[in-house]
Image (cartoon, rainbow, N blue to C red; front, side, top):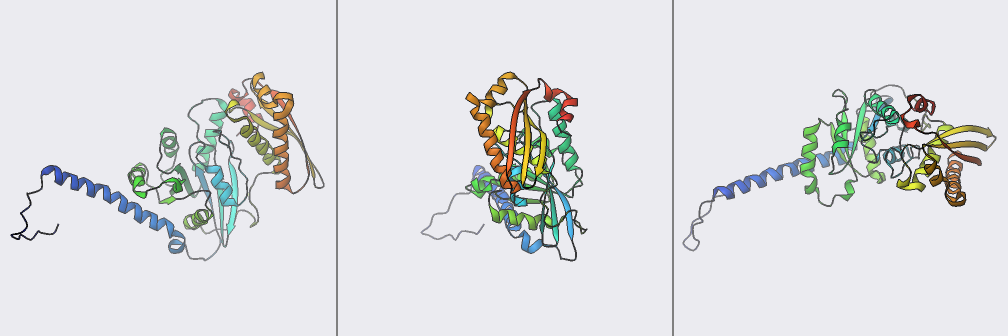
Length: 348
């Protein structure tokens, strides 16, 4: 503090009270996290230019994208790959498999692994299988991207965070950062997150912003080892067209039934045949109750027809050819809590 000059025209100010001093100290304490936040933001924004490793040879590594259900992991993966390979919907547990997406930029190949959201609400065989997928993914990668909604953190986030191994670098990706109107509002949250885990970096971004997505490549690059690429430069995913057909039908199912249909519904591909540019696909939607079957079929079969039409159009856009798609609905009571049937339906 600067000392005051005493003049005859200006009365001497009384000494500051203990409460006032405490208030100033509290103000300084609040200002500190803001300064730290600004420094971390500046570092994140310039990471590509300042922290890019020297180009000596090919780099390649596995990057796990993890987080609670419905936090935007699949949207992020699709943006990073540059094409839709992981389905999205507002329904929790949309992603049920470990889906690998690749993107090669210059000498570096990024192999992203999208994982199911870690499940804590239901303890059935299906969710136990999905959780094993998440645990397996985080223990077998070079870098972890922990996705959380900027300014938010709850018990579901904490459960996923507890799974992160101490020896693997992890990036805190604050998604939907564009919805934060004042940076000062997020300072206490950021300080709390730093105390929860020793994150290597903090990345504020929006998965829907192309510039933010490009910046993330530069941030991830330095954590990947120098080694030959795992895939061809033009490959985007390790999943087959047959797998994508089942996922696309399931996405349309979830989107068109909303919250009416329980999360335990699934899709099985019974037939996938290719005749030149034509693909003949037969799929079965499996539900647990007769009432669920009626929800999917709809009045005079209109809802099922719409599911099939939207799925067919997307499959034709994906494959570049004509698709003949048949969809049936079958009831398999209790399948989601039957470990043998869960494996039969393709869950690890």
